[in-house]
Image (cartoon, rainbow, N blue to C red; front, side):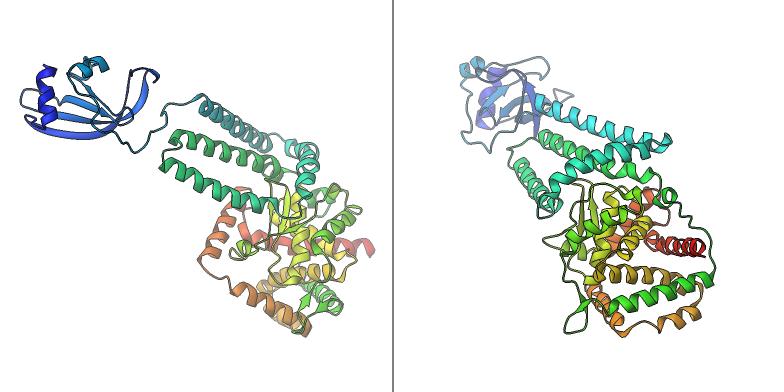
Length: 460
């Protein structure tokens, strides 16, 4: 039966209607090829009135460059000997390449298992932090502190931001992986196994070096600072004090030919010293502080309107050194506060304000005073615009120039990317228990007012 069909196949004269498709099939092959290997094949079907179902005539294997004849696909297997017997052998000597084995290899299974382990450990840590009282605080003080003293010290030795370099490497690796899959140098399953492992590892690093810390005891709680209700008068008094601080320190910093502030110290290294100095007063902040780092390409942060970012993947505090200089000392201390395990944005802002306030460098004192002034004045504006206007006119002209330079810098990056970045950050903060989202950055004012009220009560 097959021998009578062979001349028709070779001659191209096929009875009935013919269909053609490409698919994958597993079958036993000849010497040198393992049994039941997956091969790319082209199948030719015959639709005739004699059969209710399509009748498979032959399968062309592009990997072996051979034709296999079948009577009924599920019952007849033709060997190479049979094919040689009927003279139907190689129809095409050049192929487009070989597909990798589509089955899970031992390597792929190991990668998926390791990925499952990282993902499982991450979920377990988050469950314990959420539902076991005191676990997150214990974890931060003991286990996370060990990570800071190992990973933080190792990556701290590098003079550049390791996470920035890893970001570039990840983009290049992903492009190479996609190209390898397209060129059939890497199987889809093999590529998927590598990507799943990378994603699960990043998730684990995020959870262990950041996610759990969101559930620890707050800095205000451990330091005994209760941010309660306060009156408009109390807020206005704090704004007056901050205005005086800003005006005084504005005269102490270096200024360029446009009379805009610039810093003459190594802010990134100095920020770690300022945080260590603060920990002498607030023991909650004791521990190792690596140097804050600027990016080689700060545009990455500027285009998202981000002043700085803490990397849980390398335990680094990264600062946008491209922005207006008065922001940099405060931001460096803010990111180092995250590195110390205090993830709530309003608390990181408050800790940065405290650090700058108690620093010896005028650059830091001016940076902290101005950022604190902005936060408190924004709250006063919403509460009492008349009182806000009375205080606003007291600001030094030199400070006005710094604020104008800051507005001009960020105006260059208004756009869709910045809007998307803000939305992502807002949802991220809300997912981690900060119901106010990006508005939580401004809650620093509540802690500053509470600090001044407590200080007044103690001195009074």
